[in-house]
Amino acid sequence: MGNALTKLIENRYAAILTIAAIVLVLPFIVPSTFYLRIATLTFIFALAVLGLNLLMGFAGQVSLGHAGFFGVGAYAVAIGPTHLGVPSWAALPAGAVIAALIAFIVGRPILKLKGHYLAVATLGMGLLIGMVFTNEARWTGGPDGMPVARLVLFGWIARGPQTWYWISGVTLALGALLATNLIASPTGRAFRAIHDSEVAATVLGVDVARYKLIVFILSAVYAAVAGAYLALFDGLVTPGTAGFLRSIEFVTMAVLGGLGSVFGSVVGAAVLTVLPQVLTVFHDYETIALGAIMIAFMIFLRSGVVPSLAALIGRRTP
Amino acid sequence: MNSVTTSPLAADRLTIAFGGIKAVNDVSFTVRPGEIFAIIGPNGAGKTTLFNLLSGIYAPRDGRVLLGGEDVTGEAPHQLARRGLSRTFQNLQIFLRMSAAENVMVGRHLHEKRNVFAHLLALPSVCRQNKETRARAEALLERVGLGNLSSRPASALPYGALKRLEIARALATEPKVLLLDEPAAGCNAVETRELEAIIRGIARDGIAVVLVEHDMRLVMDLSDRIHVLANGRTLAEGTAAEVRANPAVIEAYLGVAGVQEAARAGD
Image (cartoon, rainbow over all chains, first blue to last red; front, side, top):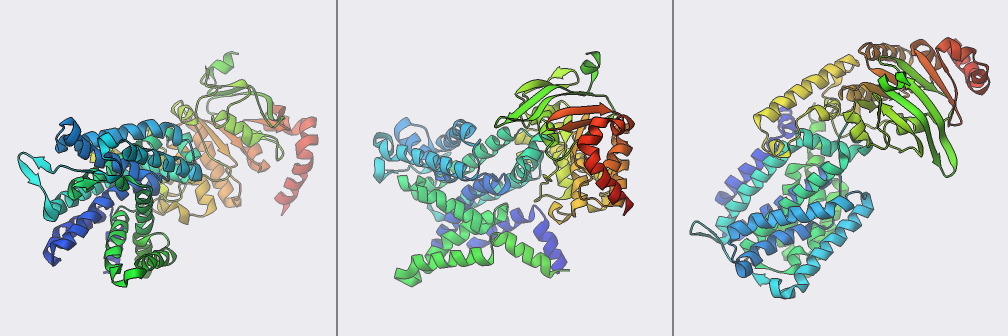
C-alpha cells in the first residue's frame, strides 16, 4: 500500500489524474454554488500559478510581475468587445498573444539579470503594466475598472459559477497536462538544467537565453488566459486585478504549494483562496490568522505542501 | 600552420587579464585528434582560466581559439558545444534536482529535435525520442561505471560518482574535443585507475582529450603530451619524459610538488 502510494506520487501523470478527479467529483459533494465559486477561483489562480511555477520552480527564474500578464488577459476580454468590436472568444487568445509579445520584448533584456535583480526588474514590469491600466481611463475605465461582456460561444452564453467551474476546471487539467508533458521533454530538461547550473547547461549546448525567454513567454500565456477567465467570470475588471499584491499572491501560492510541483500549484492556489473564506470566522483577526498559518506552513512544510508531504510519505515507506 | 588547420583544438597566443594581472599570457598549443593532452602547472598557473577561455566562458583579450581549424574566438559556450567541444568542471556543476540519467540526457540536447509545441503535446515522436535519449544516457552511465545508479537522484551520489557523471554528460554531446578539469580530484587509488581506463577509452574513440590534473602519476601515465604553465605563461611542452627532464619545469613545478608527490606515492 505504502509502496503503491510512493509510486503514485512519483508518477508524472498522477498529478493530472488527481486534478481531473477533483474537478469531476467536487460538484457532487459540495452543498452549494458558493463553493463552486471558490473552486472556480482556485482553478483560475492555479492556472496562473502553474505557469509561474514553470518559470520559478522548474527554470529557477523569479517574477514579481506576473499579475501584469494576468491583467493583459483580463483587460483584453474587457476592451476587445467594448471598444473594438472583437468578440470575447477572439479577444481571449488575442490577449494571450499580446502577453506573449510583451514577455518576448521585456524578457530579452531583463532575463540576463539574476536573482534579486531579476525580481526587481519583473516587479517594475508589473507596476508599469498596472499603471497603464490605471491611467488609460478612456480604454480601461481607470481606477474604477470596467465591466466585461459575457463570453458567447455559438450563441451560448457562458455565465454563472457552474459553467465557469467546468470551463476553468477543464482548462486547468489541460494546462497541467501540457506543463507535465513539457517538463519531461528536452525543453523541460533544459529549463531544469538552467535552474541548477547555467554554466553546465550552456557547455552542453543549451542556449540559456533562448530557454529563459521560452519559459517566460509560456508563463505569461498561462497568466493571461487565467486573467481573461477571471474577468469573464467576474464580469468586471479593475487595476487591482493586475496589481502588485496579485503578483505577490501568485508567488506565495507557488512557494506554499511547492516550487517545481504541478499539483503543488493547485494546492497553493487552493490554500490561499479557501483560507481567507474559512478565516472570516475570526472576524477582526482574519489577516493575523492567515499570516500565522502561512508562517507555520513554511516552517513545517518548507519545500511547499506537496513536495514536503511527498518526501514525508516516501521516507515512511521502506 | 598546417597542423593548426587540421587540429580539433588549437590555442593561438591566448591572453586574458584580470585587473592588470595576466592570468593567461600568450599561450599557444595545438591538440591532435585522439590525443590525450595534459595541462599542468602549480596552483594559480592559469589552468582553469585557460579552460574557461577554450570553452567560451571567458573571451580572450588577445589571441584566438580554433576548433577544427576555424576561428571560434568569442563564440558562446553553447555554440562551441554545437561545434563539438564539451567539458567538465573542477568544482562540480551537477544538475542536483535531476536523476543521474536525466543529467546525461541534458547532454543529448543538441541531438534532439527541439520543437516546443511538439514537446507541449508530447507527440509520439517526442516520446520515441525521449526513450532513445534515455537509452543512450544509460549506455553512457554504464560506460563510466555508473550503470546501476541511473535512476538515483544526482544529489544522492557520492563525490567520485558525480565526477564521472560529468564525464558521461559531456560525452553525451558527442564531442570531438573533451576538456576534463581535474577529473581525479578527490578520487581514491582504485577510482583513479578506473578513471584512467575511461579516459583512454575516450581517446581511443578519436576524441581529443585535454586534461587539467594535479595527480602527477595519472598525468605522466596517461598523457601523450604535456603543456606546462607557470604564472599564466607556457613553461614547456613535450612528452612526459621530455617535460620531466626539463630543468625549468623541475625548478618551477616538479621541484616542489614532485617531491611531495613521490612522498605520497610511497605511503
